[in-house]
Length: 324
Image (cartoon, rainbow, N blue to C red):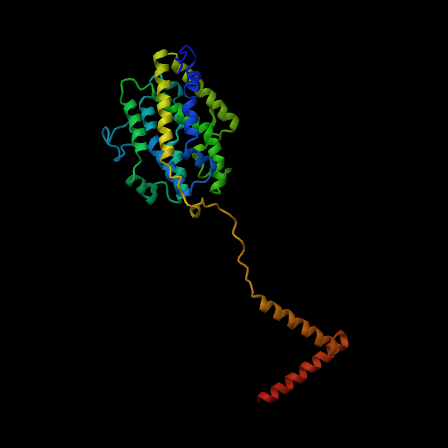
């Protein structure tokens, strides 16, 4: 590998220095399954839960490192703790970027449970019982950086996660919307991939998301102005961040049977009553016989109708007499 030119802007160094790692995560089995829309809904929800533990979970008892009540046990708490650090401050905007709350909202919507209770859902309980090593490694690395004297490398995790959500995440949004029958216009179940405009609370369009990414890259370049040491540490950490994300994708269960295909919401056909073909033939034959009798018996037309009434009266009289 050639030595990077650290005189270049940090955003450029990150793009060029992580190209191979980026391709690796994109071509991982879990990422491909997600992009193809072939994950069962339950497994997609489990994936969102894993991401929530990366972004927001605090003091997870499954983590064997550090103290269980550490304020830095998740990515966005770590950024908040170091919000004024010169490397992290230029890109710190939780109102714009925070993904923890949207993840919780999507999980709750997809499970059809109140947001306050999804952590007690069987899918999450099972995740805690079979805690992936990928989560231990990922959140452990974030905590390690947050507790270090220089948290500058946390910027690399912001780069990998947030720019990924703003870019590839938008492709996943469309795929997931179609796979699970979600209304993209309403956005319920898809808020993890939705962002607000830079200067307002309006939903960001694709064009506005480009502006957000430009703003973020400018912030990274400002952080890189601190010197080549910061640039080198952030680029190195970005490759580690991609490896950690690849491991999370690997933790997705893609080995599913055909009978467990993603449940797609479709319009149900109307429940119309059906009849055996023998009954249909019998009814048709009876109608044809009745028509034949009416015609050959002279019961058609005005005079025929009078004759039919007279016959009905005769039957009524005689059947009534017979029953007395």
